[in-house]
Length: 359
Image (cartoon, rainbow, N blue to C red; front, side):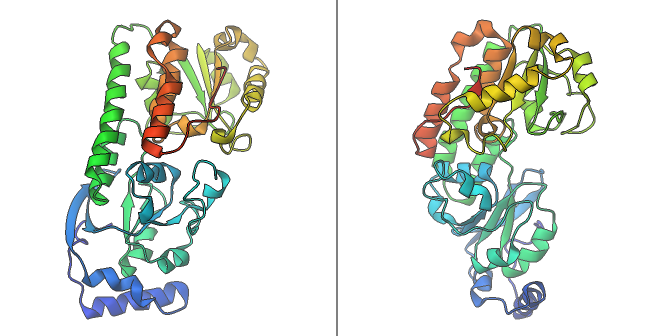
């Protein structure tokens, strides 16, 4: 989004240009409603998006398309589900977690957005990741008066600030303040408990795909460091590198953390037994030469659900990491109670599901 876009008074010529662009993009006339906000601007505020770019946002934002589950969790926590007019298509895979939102109109995903469908929904804004979709999104949507707001909600160190930013945009500052204060309180508790730690365990993190790990700049690296771990991949050059089996064995991690693969567990919220997660752990420990790794020898191989790995629930994930990295501190952390509080107090749904193995 261009920083000088908000607050501009659009002339008739600009509106005509927008209509022409719409015809080129979609092969039909632009709906008249798509340009309705151009002449009804009530207020413009400036925010900092997740790339650190200062952008202007026109208020009010009352019709919202949300492309990511991370952003949708925060929208729900702020009590703004009535603003949501379109959602990412994969929401259908997790109907129990999204009982009131699963049937909203689908617009594809941040990987493959259906721009024509977005325009048909006449949103005031689209909420997406900082990096994806690319900047072509602004070029295709801004001529229709549709704003693109890029907030990630998956980097734990930035989460509280991003929540407060969305609170300003949706005019839900009070709820945003309560949620951000909750995050900061628990982050402070974790940091405070780790102040006296002098030696950290070596940790290998493996994502959905085999031998894809979490390097610098990734949410997983942030979580590992916050929990007091020494990430084996912290000094690699990219956020999500692929490593070799030999690299892991040579690194000899003290703890191994595997993120659930989506082919096994689309939604751990609906899971009722640990067998799928145990199977992942068993396959890891059966890998050739892994029997020589310290983490495997000592049974310190852990599986954790996507839902609490990065994203709005990363604080729950880091609580589990602290328990795994420092068993002597286990009495200071109750990740399950923390998760229950988050789901029931901020998401308005009951606590259920299985998220880690071993328990």
